[in-house]
Length: 154
Image 1 (cartoon, rainbow, N blue to C red):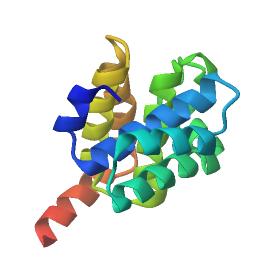
Image 2 (tube, rainbow, N blue to C red; image 1 turned 120 degrees about the vertical axis):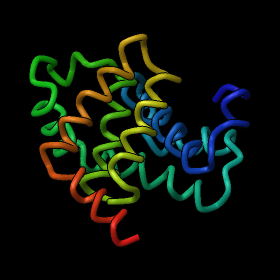
Image 3 (cartoon, rainbow, N blue to C red; image 1 turned 180 degrees about the vertical axis):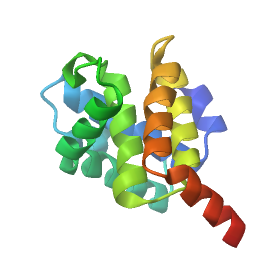
Image 4 (tube, rainbow, N blue to C red; image 1 turned 90 degrees about the horizontal axis):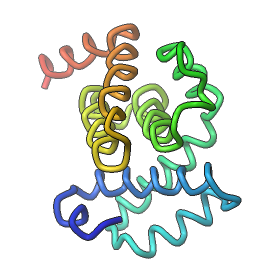
């Protein structure tokens, strides 16, 4: 991870970036996610909780690969999952994991974090693409209502 990013990102944001890098490495090489995580976490200097969060994200994205791919296909039907860039695929898999399977943060927060990862690591159009896919997912699955209910209670 570039040094300039390390200073700016929160521990959870850094953990998401490490998880993304591990997914990317696994997707584009013969390295397993665990091999990539071992090296990347050693370099990242994350706190223990963030270290665990990064592992949960990367491993969870792999465990829920089929379900995430189905949702990506549903919300980006003109893009076969295999033709989406490895970075964008990884970002979407992590965000879907957090929203649908882990419920680790409010959906809007997850989407915003995903867009930030797309701006940092993706192409010029990645942020718009990721935002579109996740925005449709949030709207369709009623996550906006869920966010509003959390705010009203909190």
